[in-house]
Length: 283
Length: 301
Image (cartoon, rainbow over all chains, first blue to last red; front, side):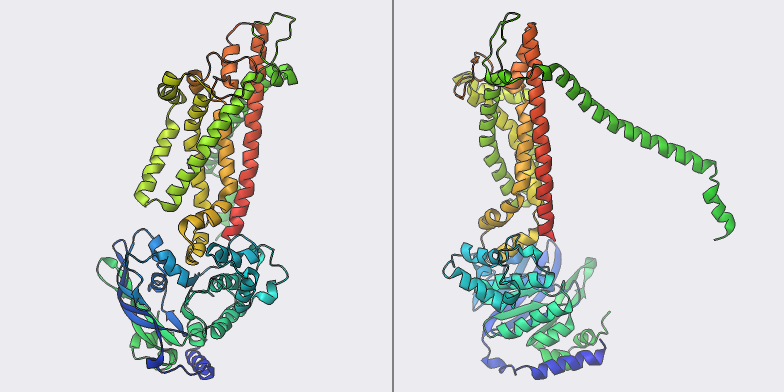
């Protein structure tokens, strides 16, 4: 896709979209201050500060290796699973610092759900994929209603309602990813983090997932990492652009370059690096 | 490329010819080594089967042993040994399986990296402890104060089984895709619940395979049982693990040494049964392993 059509497309989608409420009326979900993340002695992210708002889709874009995935995994303490990982700075979630020592990462993940890059359904039936989390987390009332609601929200219900007992591994990649979204939505999180949810999918499946984000953002807040700029332009209200900085000892780390309304990022970026990236001049 | 270059392909020079000969030679050596392994197994099975299979009958498995049977008299069977081995291997499995699986779960799902390496080393060393040393250990720990018993024998076998079960379970848990753990943890499910609900069901086939192989391995152990459960055993089937129990390998060891013809014949028959048991369990384990690997591969995709 050419440079001008990328921007045109972005603008067109932006025009169709409902206007974003003025920034001062947005409720804040996350307040990130001076976040620095390292793996062992290698920095991955430096000094990121930004706010993420409720009922919006916030996209994180940037080249490979800019720390997008590391960043989104800070929001639900998923990096705790990486032994060499450490971070400084604060991430406040409705005012509470979720990186604090006395905060239980399991409780954080309970309210901040995640959809991963590659579809990772459990090797269970379609029904059990959604129901297992509900059962384990004690949401056993109206189980089949909850499963149906989640599958409907993920736009998968009509395709699977007659074969709920069949293995989820028999679904196509796009269906599996929507199942993973249903699984995440079923346990009623407040925020859903998506780490390149469409990177392993074909355009039609991608479109289905983007459609979902539009329809569901009135109920949830989404943070989506994507390396696909058109996708960010299509789905996101706010877009953050990350880039790679280089330092001594061959270290490379990600930095937040610019964070603004998606339309602004794609049509009138204030930083030259953002402009180079969104117009495709970046190497 | 010119025509002259191509002619090399059809008329190899001396160096190429020598390389081909060396290549053939090495291939032949490797083939011979593989053939030797197959031949050794073949000779062992054949020689045991030749002497043992003819002595095999239902009496051997069910009848009590008749010591000092005169020629012409019925020699009885080895029911005491088969029952004893069953009881002791069963006890060993009951002890070693849960502990071994828990060790593997700790190492793979919970332990920090340094402890993980340390425990891996501990298991390797434990696996390398000679069976006779385990026998002396159990003698000092249990037999010296409480006397020989099926329980002491089972405990000795459990010590030998533990590293086998733990190691094989660790290997299987490593095969469970990390993306499944992430999926569960990402829902806000606690680690132990993730392990029980997602990781273990995926790995169960492989864990059973490892357990079956460990059973096959310790069923033939003789040395520790000489210390733990061999003296004053009953001649008839005895299911009580507080008594010293006879076992198949110890019975083979003792019967082959009496010089009585019918005893020696029974020793061969016992050896044949033991060999068949190990063959069957190994094949079962192989079949289970193939099945569980397929399951894991499907989940990884």
